[in-house]
Length: 487
Image (cartoon, rainbow, N blue to C red; front, side, top):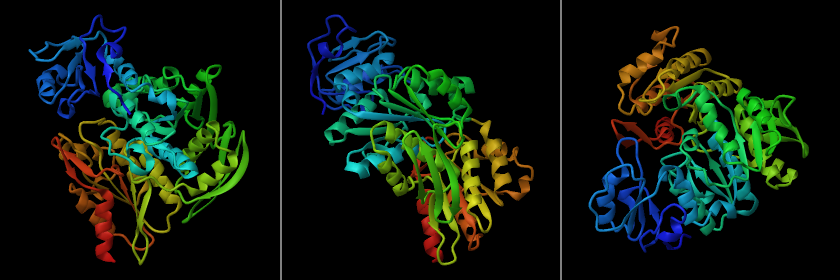
């Protein structure tokens, strides 16, 4: 729980002779300021927070803390400048909330694909073991059994520290946290004390923001170099992972995992059928054979990452193996629907990068007895270069392809589809159905028993972002509606 703090204590070392004010909270969003809080005003993507200082005052802000980089409007409350405030946000929030991560065991998970599943698997195991687990990530934040919705994979620095503090208030002792490349680049987690850090993989994504793969990799590296975890759990099947593991030797304790013999924690798929996967594990704590109901070889990697993290952080190996068998799919991650009464199996998955789409289609192909249909789109106002790559992958690995909308944002669907079609060898063979609900309906209705339909790209999301609006939409709900009509 956050307690009121004097401004002098909050800004000690950063500001000479601050006014005598007591603040009850911190807020970056003027619309959400509560009476007595400090409104923290920094530069944004389009406007400066000081543009909204009057609104914050009207909502009861006790003080405005700003970076001195924009004009301060005439206010009836104090306004205090702090040099380099943007870079100090995480430290400011950690100070106000009394460094909550130092009173928790925090495992951070970064990577292009698999962050959500791996973090959720870690939290699942902790929760089943003793009922004490928190999660911060795409699916929400807070205690695992009562998550609050989140707009970002990793929230702003103040929200991160607040969420960790609220986990303590809820009786949580351990937190699994997704850490995005944007968050690492912007220092949102700079003052989180990570006990363990996990790298799942690195492949093309977010180049619209980072500009190059080198910059993207440098952002991911920060979780291990700048945040200084005690343990690093690294995917040895990934080229960047192998390089990072070598770089970290001699610093934190590194555990490599993967399906290669050189990995310290290894797994081999010894059986695969409609019920899931049979795995043989071997590692520093011993071995074991398990069955998981999860689908796809990429989930083997996610399970290994979770297993290594759990073991390093104190869970006995026999219990780790037991927990792996109990893992259930994360909402919107290879989530299977239908498959009964002559219906096709419909799988909802968040795959929205070339590698993730390839892995999802390859995984489903291994379980397939009929035809495989892929329904997907590409986000608007994002990396255009991956659109033809994803289309080519879908055409190669699926029997039928349906192109549709996926958060077009402010971009024309015509332009998005045109980019995607440049990756198709036979563009005329792919259906283009802009309305996502109609595309899902068509794909399911055209399928037969034994077929699999992959609905890729949005996963757990319950909205479609178009022209600045988030309109209600759920792939899962759309699929269930079609299946129920046909039942």
